[in-house]
Image 1 (cartoon, helix red, strand yellow):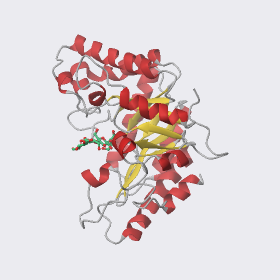
Image 2: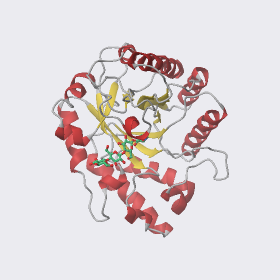
Image 3: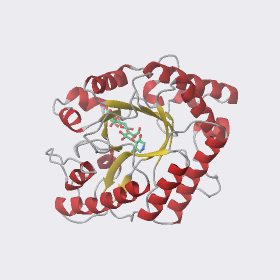
Image 4: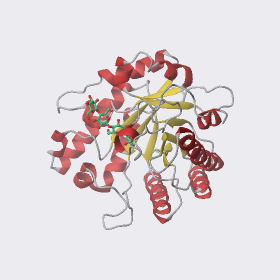
Length: 328
Ligand code: G3I
């Protein structure tokens, strides 16, 4: 299994998350994934709650379809995510004993990684494990079922299980708010480096850090800090990739051109900082077309016009920032 699919000569591999419902329901939805992507990943179908709505069975079908379709197109695929605080099933909340929670975690990772072994180039082993505001009362890690039941050791447990179950997949720790200017973001970068260092000190394999890259048009990227973060990881032998790039634009006033222009600035700064640190393994956006994005649901624009977070507009035209990214 290659680390990621071969990009056009000299280019950084580009990928995008794909959603199962439009993949099945909208014939136009698939086409740009085939023409644009070196790599594809199921946006939601490998999350704990969607894979295992009931305790007894694994619902691998939708992710199998997306992954096998990508492989048949000659693309790579990746997995998102074994451990997350969100999108967990009710039955998991009802597991209260520490030893049982540990068995559930290990069994989940072993069986899922085993099912996809050889088909996924990388896995997000833990997703969003850093506290939203690290350094406050709760400590550096984010509250979750796994932290409550197992404590911080759920992180090395998950990495060890993933390494055993799929030795060929690259193992990624993935998180958000790692690229902006300010104390909160400095703390989040420092916590990420600490977690990776602790995993390495305990002889766990962690191959790369995933920077989600949910950018905001109104937040300033700290290019120098982002570059330093990339260099620090490189010195530790750890790679870097952007895993969920998009631009949240609810604070931008103006028409579509103004929104896209603001996005170009912030994406440009992000890519400058990212590439100045170490060459990313891949840059992956959280969807391809503005017609399908979580941003319109969760952080809609206040003027009622549609959000424009992704590389292609609702008519399927590429944005300038996407063309700049593809020249990298
Ligand atoms: O498919 C159903 C639809 O049938 C139903 O009518 C509708 C009603 O709510 O829900 C639809 O499912 C939604 C699904 O997205 C598909 O769009 C779920 O409710 C909704 O919870 C789910 O949200 C996803 C979210 O993670 C929670 O898992 C988003 O698509 C997905 O983009 C988002 O992705 C996360 C990353 O995993 C981690 N980083 C942040 C990122 C954005 O929040």
